[in-house]
Length: 157
Image 1: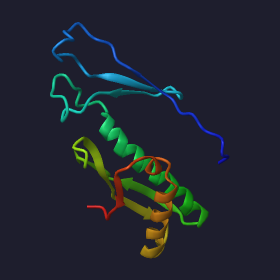
Image 2: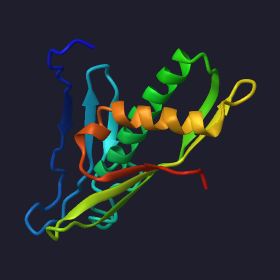
Image 3: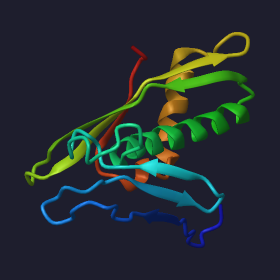
């Protein structure tokens, strides 16, 4: 990739419904729209804002944060595996993020655990080689390089 800055954009849109705003009794449901045309229903997490003011079926920013880290790691892992001529049939990650108070007393995502289950076509490489590929993917992941929380790769549960 060349050294010029890249700009990525998303449109986040919310509109008040026929409900009171003052007092916090309004829906947090909104949409994320991306340049390719994808529109994603979004909301605050019901863990942050109780139902019915959140939409439990929508993606919340905390879930999106975990998914972005997992997705970025996976994409680099797949690219590096292909360069090594290792054929991967499937990659499934049950990633989790832990939110807790940080050293400054603020709520923050402090840890993201990636638990990829990878199926190789034919014989899998040695575990030490897979671990090295995870290290390399982590070092190159744009999202991991952009956040402060700990990101670890663990065995799937």
